[in-house]
Image 1 (cartoon, rainbow, N blue to C red):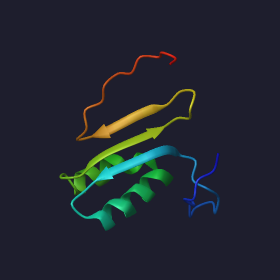
Image 2: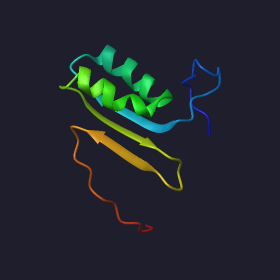
Image 3: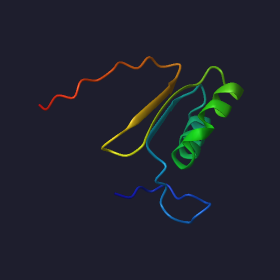
Length: 83
């Protein structure tokens, strides 16, 4: 599956994260930061230090073994149940 975010380092669709969500007072800044985190999820700590009011959620690792990282958002452990 490919998204519309292009990693400028490779020129290919970003594959480092499946989802990045930002809650920030500035919608424009939030959109730009979301794009950055989709290409490099490891930036989350550095971004959070510079924008302590920001809340963020990043899912990476792939669909079979996702890893959730959050700043300012409480994560609940999901149970693996099929509906």
